[in-house]
Image (cartoon, rainbow, N blue to C red; front, side):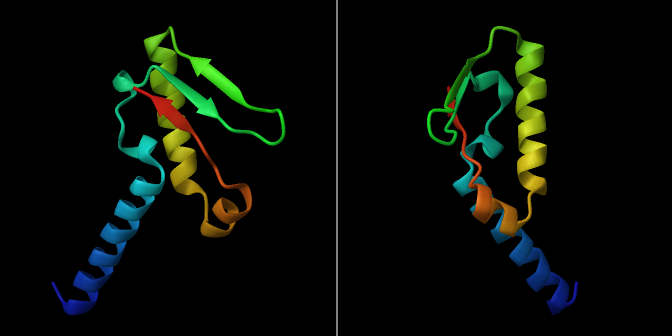
Length: 86
């Protein structure tokens, strides 16, 4: 592996690590999540308690995928925020 590839791999690793520290839900298994709180704008806050494990798994996987696909500019403007209860 050349130095450029090694440097790139390290930068990607650090970016992923930083992203997971900012958004802890990215490191969490859906099985460990009981509910999520979304802080909306003004009075638009939402609390979701999961009673269906399959629905919870799909919800968490979709949220993770969409969160990881947001570009930096969008994250700055929208500040995606989700608190999960384990």
